[in-house]
Image (cartoon, rainbow, N blue to C red; front, side):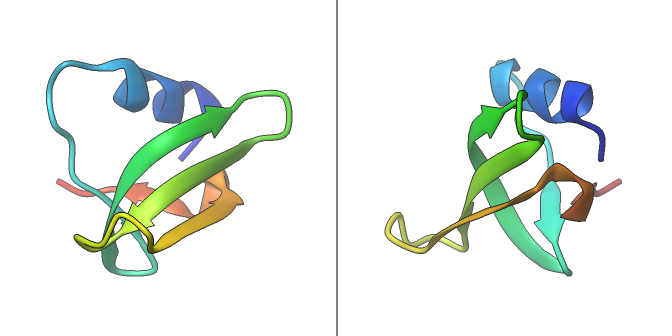
Length: 60
C-alpha cells in the first residue's frame, strides 16, 4: 500500500479491510513524513505495531 492510500483509509468514514502479513489490522495513525503507520492487530487495543505502509495490504 502507498502512503496516500493509507491516509485515505485512515480518514475515511467507511470501513476498509486491511491486513498485515495476512492478519487483519485497523490503521490507528499514519505518519506520512516517515511512511509509517501504527496499526491495531486483532481486537485487542493494546496490541499495536508501527510498520512501513508498504507492508499493509488492502483486502478485496
